[in-house]
Length: 390
Image (cartoon, rainbow, N blue to C red; front, side, top):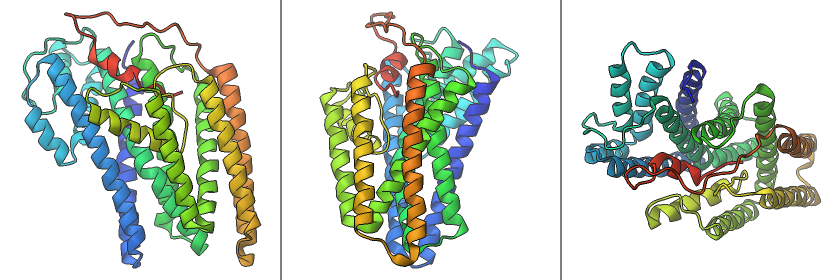
């Protein structure tokens, strides 16, 4: 398994999308405050801050687990970096540095080993590792998978609720400025990119999983995720436009259902109990918007039930919305939105069926245990294995 130039380009593109999405979100919140829409501005900034805090927390705990298992030092400096909201940017910096060396073939093995050490410890003050990875390429692939997962957490915690706010404003006012429209487009692109990028990075980081190779499988997966997401986010926006309280109640019920399902799965993703609870809360929130296989088990039944309920709830929202007739002067607009919701949902389910029947990589039998080194399980494989997105 090699970290190629194409993988480096994808890493660069992912970092640019991450920064662009953050800048656009801050600009939109500033515009809300400038227009006197303080509640919307506070909501937008709250989503950014909450998502950032959660992601920094997971990033630091992962560093802590890796430091403890590899005997490295510098945890206090890493804590300071994450408290300053610089953990993700630090991860990107060292991943790009090492990724460039691996993809474009550094001139010496010293460069590779130095980049590997920096990638694992962003503080520069590291001691020799007791578990140095035998393959720097595989180590880099694991680092990218960590980054992809963190970006996935951030994008669903931040961009998805922000999309609901922005679409509500658009439906309520009937018009929106360039920044608001740009934020909607950037958020949709960021969500789609992060979802597909993580799925690819995850499969590449697991040696017993077949890669998602070829343009058609990736395109089918992208269309399935994007269309089902767009259909759902628009239908929920219609319900919020009709009645804010009713829309929030629905989202809260779905959130609790997602947390309950994650608890029922008895996930063991985190080392500590508190972090495991936080992980299940985050998973429950993500499940509001899309389906995830949180334990790597057979999900044919659960996925079918999830999207069957998604279709029923979406149709119910459309019926309720049109039963409570929207303003007559904008019926053409809402009729167009309804058509988009129905068509996107139908096509999304169609692409889902096509992907899983024709393009989904065949699963090989997973190993129940890993090869142990000095009586310990490799930390990367243990962590990533418990969060498999289908």
